[in-house]
Length: 115
Image (tube, rainbow, N blue to C red; front, side):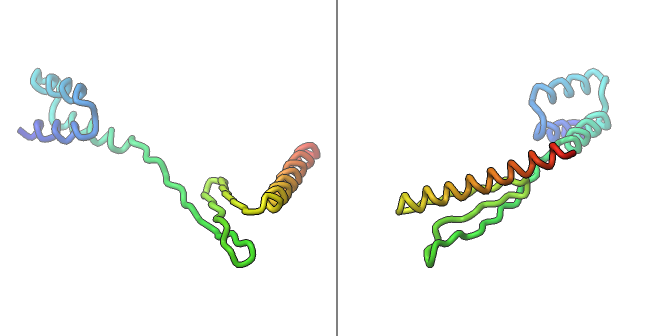
């Protein structure tokens, strides 16, 4: 009876076909309750969980108006979504971002060529 309990526990974490094979092995005395327990525990400990990343939001303001958030994750990812009523300001901000990115790219290229 205890092997039936272990098979039911195992069915929660693996496909039914695998549990049916285990049940057939138990009926033909090829597997014991201990075998089923070890297989279930081994599967549970080998399961890899995806780590969640921490998201931080920083408000972005233009004058007195908050226009967006900078979203920053732990793994060096940054997202910025901006909306401007004036297209001139939008183009100007875009040009400033391009200048910053170009400078960073040039600094990396310069430091790698010197090495």
